[in-house]
Image (tube, rainbow over all chains, first blue to last red; front, side, top):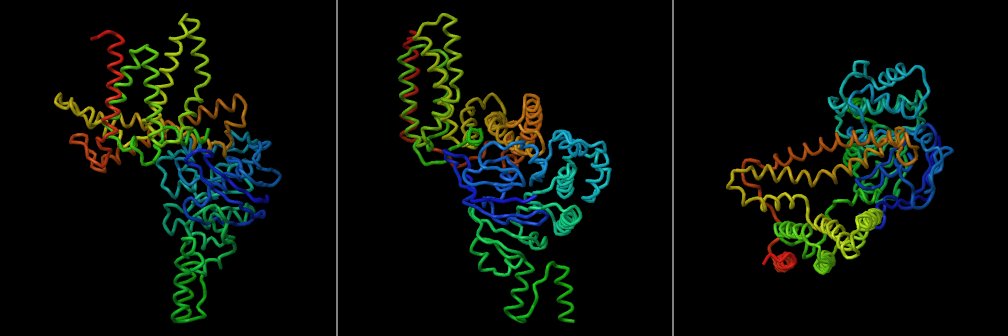
Length: 281
Length: 252
């Protein structure tokens, strides 16, 4: 499912004191089955992008094309079909979950999208397995879940209805390094095995760097930089937009500037340790 | 709807003489205003109060359209009220008075909310209730509860807005669905919004306690508006309203 933003502007809280230009003439194209990340500080316009793709907000100017659907400020025909194709995992578990039990949470979208399947329970268990959780979680209370498990249940509650695009808003928030690595593994698995387009909205440069995807840097509602992980190599350029480079890149840049000009950029900490051992020992 | 829900009950941060007024005086003025509103049926007094309210709105530097939007939002209710009063056989003057009374109350409340932050409300309520401390009431606790009541509706609306959006992305869309869909959207969103708002209120209470808000001790003090010229002038106006009411009912 291709997604295209064509000169899109979005003004929130129009004609009020809280009026704010969330997106300012943004244009980009995301191809089907890709991995993308929108990086930016708070208020840069990341969440607005997910809400425009999901048809929750309407652009003030421009046009958003999501497969055969068009969000151009007018009413979107069959908006529920669009939302069936685009799953959103919200950053806050209080926003994401509507039910007390994990089981009813996972059944929620199947029920309300009127997803016709006679293997509902199998789908639910499968979704849990994909995110690395067992069936025991079905009877748990959502308020008792750890933050890491809540993120996984959030992904599973979207996976059950098999959307073509999955958008994750701040997926690495509150997670430790090991949990982030586990999340990256799950997202890569979903992307590679089921060919889902994964879109991450985050300010966590370390997470995005290790996820290794196409990156769009947002600043004050504008896309200021776009590219792959090489974007992070230029610390000064990123610094202009108050974004720091990932720690691994900073380390590599330090070594390159002081000791060894040919020092490589490593993709994660494990790779870095291995590389340093090989170079030094 | 979005702009209404994001602005309803919110503090408008600007430096104005009304914002800088003593919160205790604001609450005292509001109390006097309500007292007059309950009792008075004089058109002249209501017009005088309206003039003072408009002056306060201008002085508050809060854009006039917020007050107009609030007024405009109740347009169907005014028509209903007119029909109701006509069926009760009320004359034109009394109908105008009751309509004015309603408009004055909602606009006064809007002014109070736009010019006073919630933490100032807590403080003001504590100060107003302080004289009954000698009766051994737990004033801190009472003011915390009243503060929560003030916070509850804006918090509920914000949460409701968030929940509706999240529900929409998983199949229950209020805007685009039929009657049954709308029913589900409202039931589900209300259930969740109430649960989340109550949870939020508990968190706010815990935070208040963490910030040394003790229900057993004197209220922690913080910067608030002072008793300045405007406080004195507006208190005088409100006392004048009361005097007008007293004259109206021949209490003297």
